[in-house]
Amino acid sequence: MIVLHASFPIAPEKREEALDLIEDLVERSQAEEGMIDYRATTDVNDPNVVRFFEQYEDEAAFEAHTRTDHFQEFEAALTDLLDGEPEIIQFEVDSATELEL
Image 1 (spheres, rainbow, N blue to C red):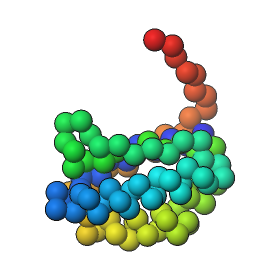
Image 2 (image 1 turned 90 degrees about the vertical axis):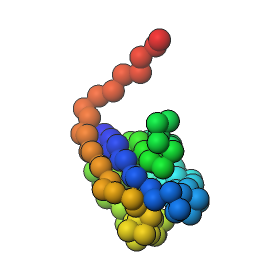
Image 3 (image 1 turned 120 degrees about the vertical axis):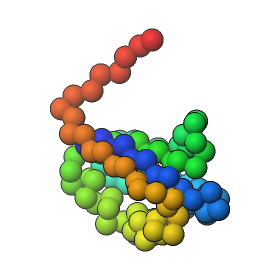
Image 4 (image 1 turned 90 degrees about the horizontal axis):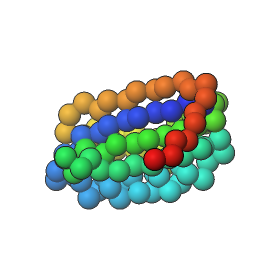
């Protein structure tokens, strides 16, 4: 399994535009083959930071995601939306266990 955590600082004046693009990106990404989970949320400490949590069955599913029209559209728009450097971390996971609280 491939897990990604990405953090994007969005320019305040571009926030609504970014959120519209992100909403479409999430909806369309969730329907992709090989996608386990794909979510985006705003940071509770800074509403202009959007964090993505993505889980893919394997590297091939992740690569297929990066070739989709909706991902490429979002990636092309990022330069105008960002207010700083994004941070993207990829994890390769052998196993995962759901914990109960």
